[in-house]
Length: 161
Length: 424
Ligand SMILES: Cc1cc2nc3c(=O)[nH]c(=O)nc-3n(C[C@H](O)[C@H](O)[C@H](O)COP(=O)(O)O)c2cc1C
Image 1 (cartoon, rainbow over the protein chains, first blue to last red):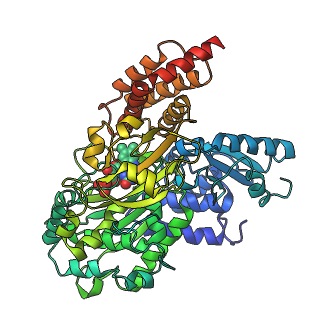
Image 2 (cartoon, each protein chain N blue to C red):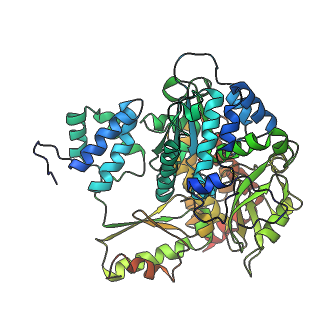
Image 3 (cartoon, rainbow over the protein chains, first blue to last red):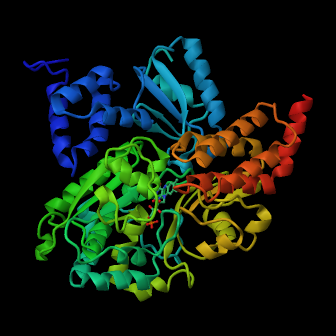
């Protein structure tokens, strides 16, 4: 992962992003959220070693970084699966069949033995209630997911489904 | 979507146009003309115009926009900030996303006009994390506006400088609350702050800051071009203008509709939205997002969609998120979803909210899993009562209000479920 000649654990691309974010806002602290997004996008999740490096290389206070990482749900607390399914289980999606579709996904994951590839969890309203039920697979948003069409949608991600 | 000829298109003006998001399309139908008009006016005049237009905040509370802007001290040294609240986390709401999809430049233009009015040097659009595509569109619009000279130094030769940037949230409903949003923008956990001081006096980094909802900003260019009186003439006496309603649930044509405030609910549901899905019947309606108290079919009769009429029925217009609930939806499930949501999203700062939402979720979990106790419904009510008006922000009240309404109006259904569960 480390292509540079100094000892940074961040890729050149990530370093460029971090440096840009650090001067983009009025205070350095505002850069913490965007930097954590960027690390997560590239590395899957923000790990202890990244927090160390942010402190060492960019003097970002580790307590402040941890405050952000633990408060906000967008940041993963452990290594994510290859495909993380986030299914809206709020009012309208529930009314339109979210629970059935989620049960179907669980069954598919179980039956096909792809637990190591797919993660599933319920999340709050995704803001597309006119297309309910809605889910995210990583950063792709899918609409009108039912227990009938969900298999087809997921098969785009893995041939074993 | 679904506009008929008697409806004025202010925010959805570009609906149906190809490449509606592009600057060229936006300019082709009067885009940035409102900005030019406002640059011929004094800041105080802009504020007066917005005040006179009757525009009220579209983020939920309906606070008069011009009045909010007038709270910003005019003659002080140092930076002032402007923030677009594009967090859109209120369950049922998807209108701000639609504006970003349709006309991101309308948001940008409205913000520049507002910046000129309050003397802001820098603005941010704060969007919820999950709007991945929408964020790209907003960032693209900001870049286009810079290139065209609508942002940056000496905008259109006026001598006025204004920078605009985008900031992405990280999955926290509480960051839709304006002071929570400000904490988040400062790179902290999104915990709300005590008011006063209000953001207009002490907001982002302790500086005067105006936070408005996306739709509020989007309404401003039209007001500049057409004048306050034309805006005031739309809607009702106290609820002026149009409003975007995001309607969803068991209806034939869910979506975002721009309607003049004061529009008939029945006409909206039956004509515009095509009525209920075949075979389903209307059980209830949540008229303004998850925190708005639920209304029964009886209460919906003759209802008009404006702040006052919905408040008179004991609910609120809120963000304009109308959720149509049909007879298949159990009130046990609905109440459980609501309780779980607020419990999950409470920031934990204030005891009545942190503990109260936990109690609501616990009690509902018990009922849902058929372990409900006699007296649980009364307990829900008591807990909700104890959560009201005692916290830094309104999330606690937002959980209490729907709980009280559901226990009051659908208490019998909950009780019957508990009894069946216990007997099973
Ligand atoms: C818990 C909570 C969540 C909120 N979420 C949002 C939101 O997602 N978007 C929004 O515009 N306003 C939201 N608000 C309202 C804001 O605090 C604020 O009133 C609004 O952004 C002001 O803009 P307006 O005057 O243009 O409506 C929320 C309030 C609370 C208490």
